[in-house]
Each structure stands twice: as C-alpha cells, then as structure tokens.
Length: 147
Image (cartoon, rainbow, N blue to C red; front, side, top):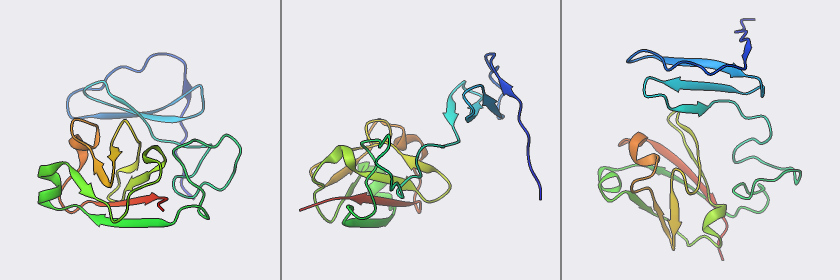
C-alpha cells in the first residue's frame, strides 16, 4: 500500500512558481492546494460526503438526504450552455439554495452562491467560479427537490 504523509503546517504557505501547484496540510487537519495565482482550494472533506449525506448532525443546508432528493439530472455540457452560461433544468427546484451539484470530470463539488446560482429552473454561473473551470463535454450531476 502506498501513502503520502504530509506534515501539518501552521505557517502561511508561499505561492508556488508559475505553472505550479502546492499541496499541503494545515493544522485543522484538512488538505489544501495553492496555485500560482495564490488561490487556495480545500481538497479534503471530513464532515460530509457530497450528494450522499445521510446524517442530521451538522447538516449543511446545501446538502440533501438521499431519501429526500427526488430529481437527479446528469448533464453533458454543450457549447450553447457554455455561451449562455446556464443549463435549463427539467423541473423547478423547491429551494434553489438546496440544489446540489458536482462536476464529474474531476472538478469535484460545486457550491451554491460561489460556483452557481439557481433562478426558477435555470442553473446559472455567469461571473461565478464555474465560469472559469467548465468546459464543453464536462458532466455535471445536479440533485434537487421539486413539486
């Protein structure tokens, strides 16, 4: 069995050189990455499992329980969706803030208000983080409750 052992750091991690990414552990026990622009991204996740959260303890409002979510859409992103910066959902979510999404092409979880928003039955990302990472052919899984 292979493993990578990281020493937790309490000091500020320097921004890596151009075209490099640094991966490190902080004293909070989580793993982070920092790119050459200085952007830090949380890589680890210990309290919930995206889209499979079953516990009521410390439930994040964005995450649904499996037995409550009644609509799952798998979308392969098209050129038109990229240009319009939106996906039209089959149904209108009951509560837009409770919509879950993840990027299936290695991009990981997407977060309401940071990566996307939902208005009516539109999943939108104009000028949000998803705008900078989404590509044609990426697969997005979207889970939500509807009437």
